[in-house]
Amino acid sequence: MTVTKNAYLAGLPMILDEVEVLRAERVSPSFVRVELAGPGLAECGTPGALYDQRMKIVFPNAAGALPSFEDMDESWWATWLKIPEGERGCMRTYTIRDLVGSGADTRLVVDIVVHAPGEHSGPGNEWALRASAGDRVVVLAPRLGHDFGGVEWSPGTATRLLLAGDETAVPAIRGILRDLPADATGAAFVEVPTAEDIQRDVARPTGLELTWLPRGDAPRGASLHAAVIAWLTGTAETAPEVGDDEIDPDLWETPVHSSSGEQVAEATRVPMDDTPYAGLYSWIAGESKVVTGLRRRLVNELGIDRGQVAFMGYWREGVAMRS
Image 1 (spheres, rainbow, N blue to C red):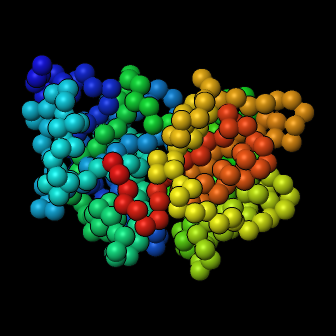
Image 2 (image 1 turned 120 degrees about the vertical axis):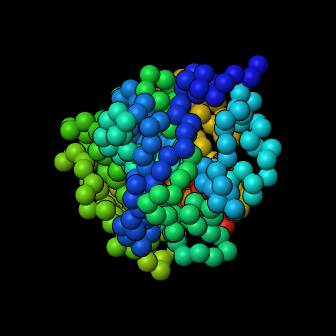
């Protein structure tokens, strides 16, 4: 049954609305910070802390036009996907950096990773490189009072925390560290392309050490893998070779979800007995091959229970991201 736009939008557990760029700034070589505003964001928010809250952005199509949802009904998602991407525009997933203001003045801030245009330059990269005030996009974002999902941070009863990720995980790690309780302890390791990409304003508990790892000319993930394993075992090691056929194209393994179909629990399961990794919860995100190598080492070789760690492939080098 088709319903009117306003009635259907009012019943959605999310905000689906067109918003405007208030400002866009190249804050470092690898990040463009975009601040979005619009009346529809008045209801944007979550019941608790943001942590690693995901949302989606629909970018204009090749002609610069955004999709219209004026006549949408319950089938809008399937209908939208049937439209050729060159016509409908492209949808990509990002982490909310900040929600600023309140009510009609609410602004949604997103950090978009960018690189020089080229063979593997996707629609988000191309749009962000030329974004300016007045540009418009469509957002799918959490609506207050509804369960939107999109938060993977779930440490359960953990007493030690480990976070690791590349540049695409910076907004999520920043949000998690900001929202942790003051007595949280552990470590966070973040690999970024250059030293200029280090964000020195990240708030964190004093008991949680934050280490930035500028990649430079080193292989992707090499310093991140070495740092994580050194923290866990006391000995740094070279990242393993991971074949393309070993990578789950939908890599998303958390205590409560398995993209590969493994058996999962109903909640994070942190062992508290006398074992080397008792009390530990790990959150690892970034390029899928790097994450796969870390998962193999932690779960298969170190014996860390999959119920106490989240591994998320945010992207895969050389492969176009999907909606």
